[in-house]
Image 1 (cartoon, rainbow, N blue to C red):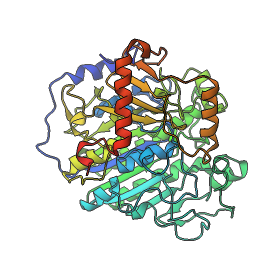
Image 2: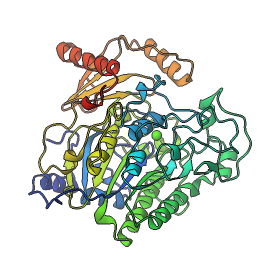
Image 3: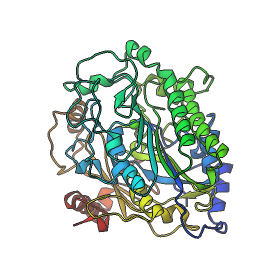
Amino acid sequence: MILFRSKPTLFFAAALLSYFAPAQTQAASTTRPNIIVILADDFGYGSLGSYGAKGLKTPHLDRLALEGRRFTQAYAPGSVCSPTRYGLMTGRYYWRTSIKDGEVLPPDAPLHIETTRLTLASLCRSQGYRTAMFGKWHLGFTAGNVTDWSKALAPGPRQIGFDHFYGMVANLPAVPHGFVENDEVNAPFPSEPSSTAKPSTATEATPAVRSTWKVDHVMATLTAKTNQWIEANQQQPFFVYYAPNAVHEPIQPNPRFTGSPYGKYGDFINELDDSVGQILATLDRLKLTENTLIIFTSDNGAVIESRNENSATAMKAGLSLNGALRGGKHTEWEGGFREPFIVRWPGHVPAGTVSEQVICLTDLLATFAGVLQAPLPRGQAEDSFNLLRAFTEAKPGAPVRDSVILQSADATYDVRQGDWKFIERTDVPTFATDRNKRTVDAAAHKKAAGLSTDELYQLATDPAETTDVRTAHLERAAALKKLLVTARNRGFTRPDAGP
Ligand SMILES: [Ca+2]
């Protein structure tokens, strides 16, 4: 029934039972709830208590699961930051844009969302919501590459629907080395040349950068800013997009988080949980909990390469960052894409339940439209499906979407449909490979490894993708390949999104 858990926990068993319990009283209609989306960074499928982790302190995330519904088959559309963040905000796959290589935007990149495009924020604002974002943006600023960080960073989040922005341009070690508030860098930063030539080196941490940033205070600052804004804007419906830097490198938790059996990585997870807890406490204190739809998820799986000392230490101590899934961040395997996904909406989402619906983070835009009863225009939200039924259904119903297309950080495409996972290795679309060294290196590695045939995995019986069964299921593999090519060429997968 539940596919990916060999040792059910009490929590899990209780949740499973409650799925089949009588439905809770459902409110007659939606009531313009506040909406909060929390997108953790590089936070793996197995990194919290309700998804099987032991020895971590994630009581607040686990509270969300007990009071809401957690999904076991939720996908980020990319296995690295910018692709997923673009898909989340626009309901459209990143590879439909000008960037085909699956990789992140450099910190000085221009805004990668057209200001005319419907987004989570612009949809909410059009419905009378106040809208704000706190945390890592990573979708570019200005109309051209940023060359002067002292000038207004516009267009940016405020031109695609947010009333307020406070956060980081991209990853912490990258330029401009300070918080941006609306369209201004508001913290001291060293003048540094643009990183256009070598974007990958701009994301490497250096001791000097760490001291400039006070990296171990970033989570606390973002949490406080989020809570202050919610308190100041509680009188009308609001949408908050909170994208904390935890648990992306640099792994530098605040010193008050210490003592995890999994080292600093575990401490950082505990800090993330504490941050979520502070937001839940604000909702409780302001009596907003009942009328707030809150979603917690992550942009891609955890980094599991051994060169990453903190995650390596955590894994050595027994924490399976991505659960039993294969691979991690950047990769084409499930560990790169499958995410924890928890939704709580009292009176609408049955509490303490688990759903196996296959969903994608691109679905939030159509879901918001469903919740707000707002129309979705054609030519927008091209890959977005309304999840409202998946959130609220008392019993497992028909799939809310037929399939999900995934693209790794080296531009490998996957298709998940039902229990099947197809990985495309042949006749892959070509694109310019000079933008990103990692894409070039990965392509060379795959060629050297002889990865020259498509692959098919049966996730129901082989969740860790150990055995390629394509040759035993050639027709199914061919059908999934056709599905992928059609979706890629057609420009949309949401049926009503076409011209
Ligand atoms: Ca990430």
